[in-house]
View 1: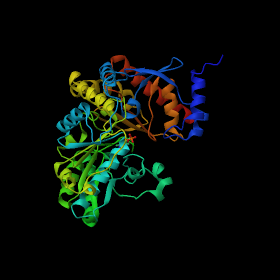
View 2 (view 1 turned 90 degrees about the vertical axis):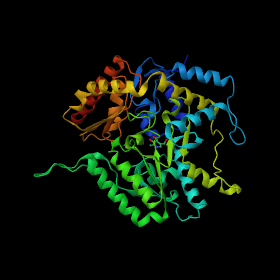
View 3 (view 1 turned 30 degrees about the horizontal axis):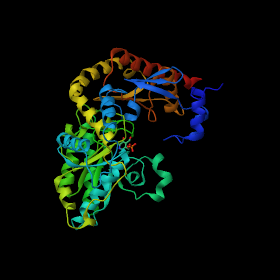
View 4 (view 1 turned 60 degrees about the horizontal axis):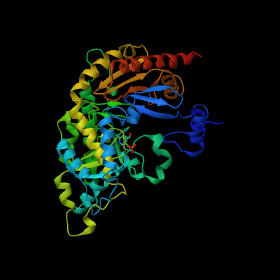
Length: 450
Ligand SMILES: Cc1ncc(COP(=O)(O)O)c(C=O)c1O
């Protein structure tokens, strides 16, 4: 009798029935999708009994491990009370409590909800442009983003996503935003005789000057600048100095446009502070949140903004209101999962404990960092990244497969290898991740000569 839930059959059924994301489906002929039966803590368990350490927090969403009992209990409790209610004309305790909590954490307010990161980007862009329209400045409806930026893949979000592979096919559909140079610290010019070379601050200042030049020309038609603070994750964990954010804030004030920080990937402790922009000591006009917000359990995103923005919409005219909606806006289950996740920050003292864990991880990664093919080793909070010099075509795909063979889920971006694990890692998990990542590097580089 055929086992309809074996790895082989589930992969085959999936390839017939499911269109997998971010995937050229034909490539699955060589490497079928892996069927996962359950997950607990940092471990994913395949239906075939294989286990994998989740080194990328399931696309950067998981914070406290899978199936955390505290989040699970909150969800079960909520399911017995209220599963869903439309948020237009109604409200409920979880959405109120979550909005209050997010306001306290961010110093912004008036939380507007959606389900995915890209939808949060859409909200921020629409709200910003609509604000200027309500203020009698309808011409301020253009956006500017940073080179290599990633803000999601819906048609509106693609306008500010500067990754050709994701955008090119849809170019005719997209109302392209302007792009200014990235402050990526890897662009630092090396030392030459007589000088010390550029620092990360120098690169940030160079990028800020380019932004200033651009704004000087275009500010009158620009609604907002959107940035991923401190780490441009999808660009290959490109990290920059907080100096750039301080300069960007000052320039947005000077030229009268909004600063949108997209903390969808960097939020909730990922960079060491609750939110990355806090390391620059700035206050944005909009913050976009998602991914870790529910600890990786349910889709939820939020945009918070200033009282000034909110007031510009508060009016007798319905059309001046922000009428954006989704059916599942502020879903009670997702909000409860988010509240339970935020409680875990206090219960586990996560931000402080992560410092100890990060030091342990950095030490465990030393053999990788010091590998002769590795350049630009970098680390911030709970993100580690390395660039690998390799001529192997499809380095990323090859590495991913080797890592899986060593029981680790890692998905390089181009030749950038990175780890972004959950926050609760015991000694065994740290060693397994570091050793698996190194073993996969050796196995991948060995293929160059095969
Ligand atoms: C910075 C940033 N913004 C937006 C998004 C889009 O989020 P989603 O995939 O949930 O639409 C991502 C996803 O990786 C992201 O990293």
